[in-house]
Image (cartoon, rainbow, N blue to C red):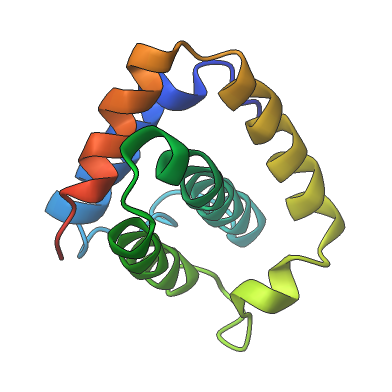
Length: 124
């Protein structure tokens, strides 16, 4: 799955994490599809952690909030032993992350700021 509107949809991911923690991403999907969605969400969070400190200047708060997001997305992954560190070596994850980085580069500074402000103000 491609992130053609990466930062535009990222606010939706944040709202989904905040407002629908109880809703499972795997509802109606195969285990593989649900895992891919979890990987996409984690990649989006990783990109926020890379991009947002330069945009907002508050890296500690962003890092804490992104970690919370990543932890919540990992709970949706079928292999409960999967960690963020293990995911960094996953071939599919690497491809998703590369696409997300490209999309982030193609996003306007205003859109980046808006998403980063959402991350900065995120609370569980």
